[in-house]
Length: 239
Length: 187
Image (cartoon, rainbow over all chains, first blue to last red; front, side, top):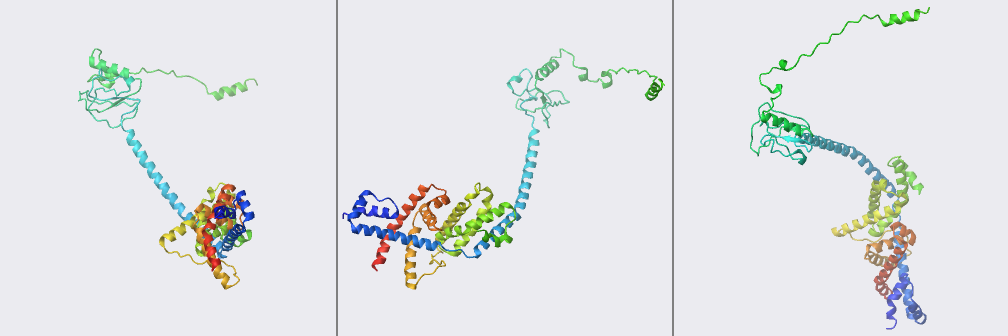
């Protein structure tokens, strides 16, 4: 019973752990425990011997050949597949680029731009939002739907402005930044009729009558001698 | 080890320096990979299949291996993992039946052979029951006379960790086998 308490210490000591002083003192006076410790160590030695012998196995001579052959075959397969995969990836990338380009072009056709003021029919100018708020400036215009516009491009209809319901938003005119006030004042002048409209807006006026003829400039005919002759004469004159 | 590479010179993947380096390192480490796989599977054919698969995987990842000097330990770990997976899958299928080991060695006589195989079977059963992290330490320690330092290098672990794991593994093996040996001695 006294020796049983050293069982775990004996096992640990046989497995390679340090032997405690208590166990060491016990072993000096206990032949049975010394034999048990030797037995455990012998058992572990036999375990080591079995493992060493079993794992000292040599692979078959053909293993290296098979390993290299398989690696080479794998590499050949990879090199055969890689171009196809690369071509497929290239094609997929091309399709993505084309689709993205088409989508971008379609999106650019929309009139709303952050730095442009949108003018559409349905709202009076005086009720329009000021440009500082970056809200769309809605100005009566033609009811024709907008086809396409780019920033700073101005489209104007041929028909006069028609009052439209508020929910109809047909942006047609994009005003360059900084030109909103000038455009508002211009439209206000047209509405108030306090100032006659520009001649180009008058009906019945022909283009030829509105454009003043450009005065012709008379170019006098110069009487000049050829340069070569004058140089030659200058060179010959000292002699 | 270069003599093992020379006969294979005509079968190299390519003459690129990278491929040559891979083949030299593989020739040096392939036997270890096979033995590690054999320590799990204890079937020559299975272990060779695992060694081949480990070589293929190592080749695929060789360019991404930063420290080429660690190729040996890298290959060992690949082989170990592949062998464990193979063993698990075979156990799941219920196909595998662990056969007696067939290493090329000579046993003095039939009685010793029979007794040795019985002991061997029990030892391997005990080793197989060890947790994975303890088992690989035991297997690597038994291969090619590896010391603690070599095992630690192969596993990428501190030497003290390997030492404590080996002690724990041996303690468990001892507890497991003690009754078996006692019974064998009595008979």
